[in-house]
Image (tube, rainbow, N blue to C red):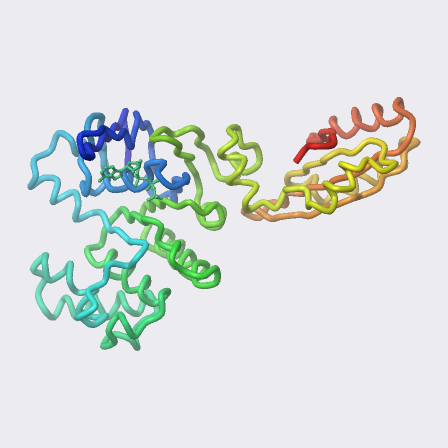
Length: 343
Ligand SMILES: Nc1ncnc2c1ncn2[C@@H]1O[C@H](COP(=O)(O)OP(=O)(O)OP(=O)(O)O)[C@@H](O)[C@H]1O
């Protein structure tokens, strides 16, 4: 478990104070995969670095498995840190050492006997799928393989918490997926709590259970990935969700709406879950004296649940259209009129 209470971090940069964290309250439960998303400069790195004491908070508390780091001695903090592994965006491997030696490094530092190191590193390399690369050097590996080494090294001390600092930001989408799959496997097989910071909503969508949106050093929104994706409350969260949910109206359709070339009323209909599969529109067309013209539509899946997004034109008498709208609203489907100049 990781808990932040009124966490503040102020940097002093050339006589100027920069408040990177501005009173963070957050609870990350044991065994979950929690994502913190935000734009550049929002405070993500500062937050994650306070967990393993690479940065010390200016005020507030960082509580790891019930222990408040701000109240511990340096020796006690070192003990807590043994329980925390970290994976970095640029891997942070030692290029002069082999893959085996990189993974063995934390065990050597902890004075683990040689034979035990050999056994553990062999197991870890097998777990991350790099058994055949033990004697390679980092320069001989792809980005994804380097990150697997970084992950094996982070797991070497058998941590209960894994911190991922933009761990997939330097990787292509396919490699990102395979690394995220590995992180999920780690979470499931070793019950390790994973805290991920990222600026990529696709990462959050792919593996996180819950997410917090950070902006200007504050958590502005927090919830299950499903809830935040299905009803984002802030503009920032809405922007992040739009970046992966494909719910923007394409320019060609916007142009048609802008021209308003004989179009009557245009609506955006959003379905979530079971309702996405319901033939709602054909029911509406049958029940009411209106014509429905589908201008655009797509369905995205999130954690096994379909999210539908349709742009439709209703043609008919106002009274019939209003009755159809009331009917659709009862079906717990979101329907909103799209006016010219809307996005
Ligand atoms: N060592 C430092 N000294 C001074 N200012 C800092 C330092 N580290 C970070 N900052 C400032 O603190 C704020 C938050 O930075 P931080 O790196 O935590 O954000 P971030 O969300 O991780 O951004 P990015 O994704 O670009 O790394 C920024 O305004 C940044 O310039």
